[in-house]
Image (cartoon, rainbow, N blue to C red; front, side, top):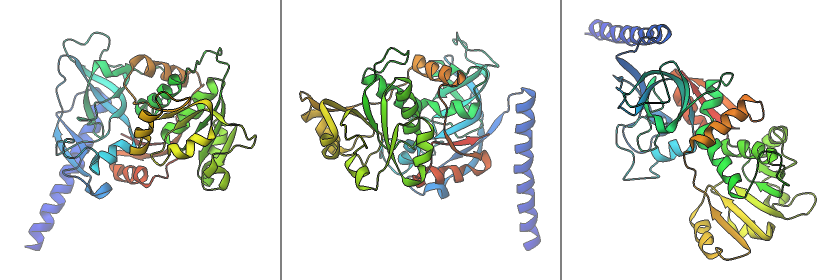
Length: 355
């Protein structure tokens, strides 16, 4: 009996290994595989331990979709918050393949696709209720997919969709121009060492703003290196008070942390002044209503997929004006490690899974 079980174990291991090798051969030869490996979970909770590898059929793209052979995927906090039940009981539908931000190569196009073609390197922000990015192949609508410029790596591109777009749209909400014509304002960016924060600091400097940033002590130098004029350790008295060395108040505060509170932001604002909140909590949502007609106000900005915005970010990366700060790269076989790192809340920049 023991010998029989051992034989089954080795046969199963050989089959999984052979399937994985076949997928790699097909990928390098341009052939479309009939099945793919994906990471999924089957219920709420469980963290990284609940992620399981499965073999499923490769999807056929709908008429307005492209099939992408994924080269890199970026994990965002929203991915594991959905697993924890953020949108319970409506989303997701189980079993669920997570992750929305991917970069890769098109291997098949639907009959109605007009701008994209087989062989194009692309970046896509998948719809969050379907996701599917933590897989070797994924089907994506042409409407949420843009071409990746030559010279921009898949890992750098995959970091952009949610984090980059959120940072860009928050700064555009306060009137930031990126063509050198902006006179600049005194602004504060909270949690500046995170995925959104690292993009926001760089984009704010491109808009000629004077940037004060907050982060943990271990990331002070990293945030200074991407352009911040001053960096505050959020645990120090100055950091708690959001007080910069000049003593000047802020024209704008870009809040990227769910722990940020209107009661802490209000004393640090000029009058008029505005908080742009992209990680709103209940009390900040209430403040956004109560301060609507005030000189000091809080506005909530919700990221949306804008193809032109994403193209703009990709061009900035290509030109060397913007970079994706990568905390760590993890092979697909160790996607659970990437998931765990993102959940830890201690990533500096983006956590990337490389296929």
